[in-house]
Length: 136
View 1 (cartoon, rainbow, N blue to C red):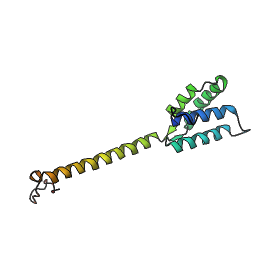
View 2 (cartoon, rainbow, N blue to C red):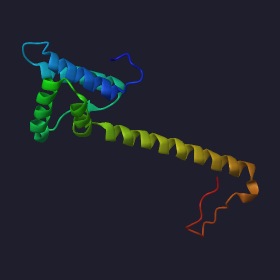
View 3 (cartoon, rainbow, N blue to C red):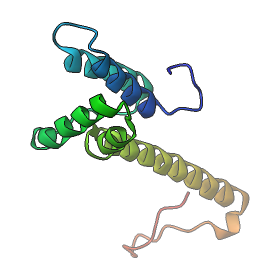
View 4 (cartoon, rainbow, N blue to C red):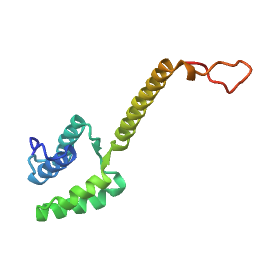
């Protein structure tokens, strides 16, 4: 499961988590241990955290019981992805900021290069004009 390059980090983590929950590997603490293992995969892959909100536990437990009976984890994986993954928005915001910063630096460099190569278009400072921008 973990070695398949075609599978996303989140899908790997959810598959491992629900598989380990259903296998009842330990006498007690199977859900906690499975969730901890899955979150290790999520953190290592930069994919957020699995954390089902308390107000959705009734729904989640019904889905888990259904998965235990059928061994079909598609429905519970989709539900968990939609309701129990946190941290993706923070990651998306950081990625967007990085893109904006790179774009801003690239545009500033292009403007400076243009001004250096075209001195006739260089703006002149006019201390009497408060809206005048400084020269490059």
